[in-house]
Length: 511
Image (cartoon, rainbow, N blue to C red; front, side):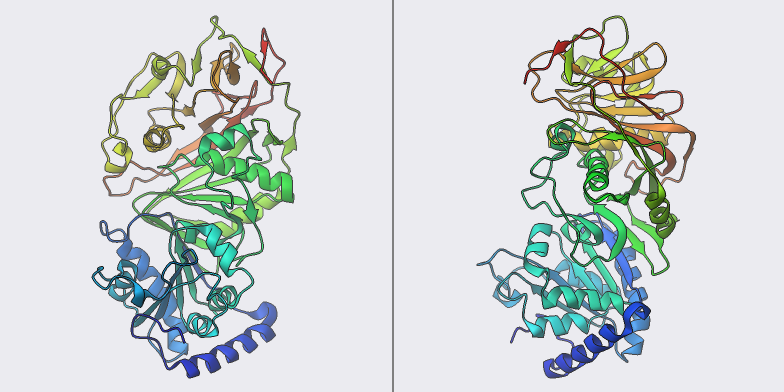
C-alpha cells in the first residue's frame, strides 16, 4: 500500500469506500455535475518572494465549501511524475532535504491535510493513490514534464480521480507543466520543447504536438507557461494557427508569466494573481493565415490582451467569441530571398546596429532578467520605423528572450512604442511608402527562413494597470499579434494586418 508522506487523510479502507461512492454519484449525475475551479500558474519557485501566498489562499478558500460538505478540513494533494526508476515514495528521498515548499504553502494557507505523490507508469493504476486524490478538495500538479503526465496518467485511475475532484466542485491547479495540462488543448511537448525560432520556421515542427483527450478541464483553452521570459507569444500564436488548421477550432490561448496565476471559477470569471501578466490571445474576424508544413507561418490579427494582478475577465465569453470567428486562409507567395531595400527603412534580425532603427530601443548591455527585476531601460532610437521598438537577435539566445518580449510589451503598455517586432537571423522587415510594414527574407547565408513576430497597438488600444511590484509589466487591451512570413504585413497606423503582396526584385531562396 502506498502511503502519503504527510499525515494522511483518513484510514485507506474508508477512502476506497468513499471514492467508490463518489465515482458512482459522478457517473449518474451526468450534466448536472458541478464544475470546479482552475488555478493555472506560469512557473517559478513558490518560496521566492511572497507572491504565492494569495494564490494558495485563493485555492484553499474556494475548496472550503466542498470540505464543509465532507465535514472535514481542506485536504490537498500535490502530485508530480518522475521517470521510471526514480524514487516515487517521498520517504525514499534524502531525509536531510528541507520540507516540501508546496506542501508548506498549502498548510500556511489553511489546508488541514496535505499528501504528496510521485506517479509514473508503475503506480498510475494504484487505487489507493487514486482514492486519496478523489477524497481531496484540491489537486496541485507540479512542474516538470507534461509529456510524462499525459503518457503516464491518461486513461488511468489517476486521471479519473483528478477529474472527479473537479466535477464535484474542487480545485485543480498546476504550475509550469502542471499548468500546461489544464486546458482542453494541451501542448504535450512529446518530442521536446519547441523554441520560439522553431515555431517561426515551421508550424509543423516535430516539437509541436497536441493532446486533446486528457483531463479536458477548461474547454476552448490552451495554456502556456513561462510566457514573457521565454518569448512564447511567438509560439502560442502558431499553436492557435495549428489548432485551427488541424482541428477546425478557434480557441483562446493563455500565456502565464512565472510567479503569476490565473484563477478561474465555475462561472468562467478569471482573476490574475502574482507579479506578472496573463496574456490572452485569440483569432478574430480579421485574421488571415497560412499554416503549412515546412513553410514559415503567417497569422495576422490575433487579439492580444494582457492582465495583471487584481484584474478580472470573463473567460467563458472570450471562448464563445473565439469559437464564432471565421479566419480566412490565404496562399503564401513563393518564398524568396530579397536584397535589402535601400530605398526604404528596413531591419534585419542578424544586424545588431538595426536595433536602433525604431523610435525607441532596448538599452544595450542590460542584465538578462532586467524586466523581471524592474531595471529595464529604453533609450531613444533613430525613428526610421515610427512608433517602433525593434528587437534584434531576440529569440535564439535564451538570455535575450525575457527582455525582448517583456520589453516590447512594456514599451507598448507604457506608451513608449506603438508596436514592436522580434527578429532573429533569417527574418527582416521593411516599411513600405503606404505605411505598411512587411516581412521579407533577407538574402545571405542566414539559415532556414523564418517569420517575424509583431505586437501592435490598434486604434482601440487601452493601457491598464501596473501591479505594485518591481517587475516591469503592465496590462493593456486591444493589441494585435502578427506572425509575418515573406511579404505579409501590417499597417502601423491601425495595427491591423495587411494581406501579402507580389514580390519585388528578388533572389530565389535556396531549396
